[in-house]
Image (cartoon, rainbow, N blue to C red; front, side, top):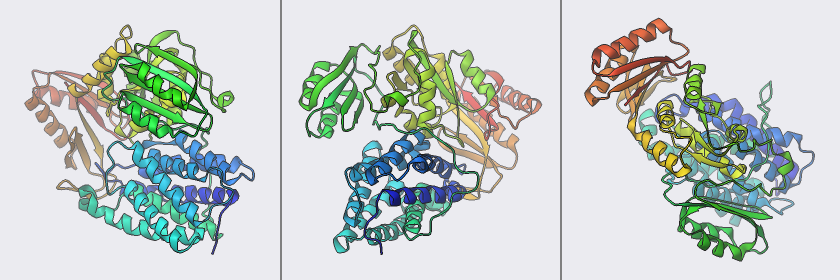
Length: 542
């Protein structure tokens, strides 16, 4: 039984975990039935952890601290979807705990697992039980107990795995949707797959990545916990402090969270970087001076031009477009038709992605850096992309504001309310308020058999989704179109836009538009080619 691991061991454990998640990603996707059975958790987790595996393969004989640092930074940039972001946070916490250690025994590993859980729970605003967070938390708690009994790494890791299995099995009882579908949580299963693959590598039975390798991603980034919703404070305040003492930056974070909104605090061995919206920047700086001397300071009324980042990896950073205007916008969407819609509305850059292919933080960062503006608004247009987008602000000298659009129609409506001549604050208010004025309906298909919210769903069924979740299912798409049209008519909506997908011919789409026009005679019905995959129709009603 192995007592400790070193950097080379950690490298093998992570590569093995990445390979196993890659192999099992479709099984994880099929478990992901919440809120509808069109999941992508396995894909997101695979692309996130394989970002770490890719960079670790390039590292020759890394120390334990270096290997953990490489993995954590690569995963943050490669994080896709909420499951991927949470996975990256677990590794960030582990990396922090392993800092300065040459080897890792059972006690250190148990504490590292717990540090990962703490990092993940801190970042998630409203943690839900019956998820990857639950599985990771209970596994770490068991590891801490096991470490008191036996300080061998392998013993502690085995204990964590056994508890993760029990916790995972119980997720079906903690989430009503999982219980109805009769499946366990996909993210929790992914974490268990990773832990088990690590144990295999520890015993010399490394899981081998599938042929063709894995996607390459760029490395190194710092984490930020940034909530951009409901920004109401006047002054956008940013400063960088050189770390000159051992004071815990978490105390500064707690102070600033009570002083303002839209808080970002990033810390490493050399600096603390703060970005906060507040009505009293003087108080923020007075508190911060106790942690070290100011390197840069910038205060503006929501028109902040960020100072250049002081990071050890600065020379590796991509080229950043110099500001030529105050405001810019980038939008996430899939389909050339939808891309044309956003570009015609004034979007500066398109990030390809959607329900089954979430862009990473790195993808969004690169798009942001190409826009020659001081402040960049990001439209995720998918709830699973919002969390990854919110991390970009800490990785660029540009000021990044994420408008939490959860659908493409919400993103379109936000752009219709965007004023390139307005202030940042005015646009945040107008675009955020516009999100609630549009109702989004979508028609897709079921990826697996499931029982959801009283609906008996079979693989291949057409699924109609509205803002509240699953609206209905049918083997006949016309039945769903008619039901959605009647819903729109009864709600009194006046403007209807139908975006038809890549798998729908124009003549069939026109019939769908005609159906809406017949059922909703008082509404203005527009038909546009979206070209989006997966979703046959995206329907916007205002």
